[in-house]
Length: 177
Image (tube, rainbow, N blue to C red; front, side):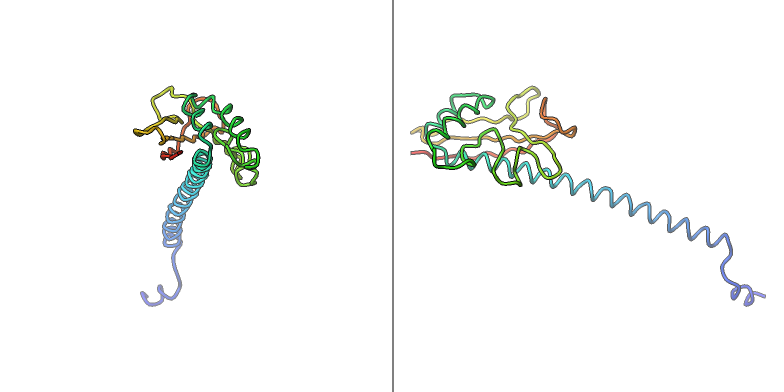
């Protein structure tokens, strides 16, 4: 009788138990997939913010001394005037020079301060809750060294007002003879 029962196949209860085990495994895999997609999105946003911080820092590194002095003499929310003065000093440098606050390059990858997913990024200029802000200052004995801190932020609700939910901070020194 036992041998005849084994050859008949699986019972309905055995099939339901195996389906439940497979379902639990699939749910765990879907949760892992959702976590992976979220992590990938966060990594992409972090990379985009880092690219924008590097863009601003490279503009500072190539800026003339008059533009650097303007950055030091103004709070970062007023750096737009320094951009205009820098472009006047370097008329042949092109549209991608002297980008201190606009985050807009002629390249489509860094156009209008947004990434391909239309996430907004901005230079953090105000300090309402104690996080770092964009700033520049002179350092060194001869005052030929400029310290720059660039803070790029973005918000989960994709607005550009208020404190950012996430930030990237890039600090560097620039020597200008």
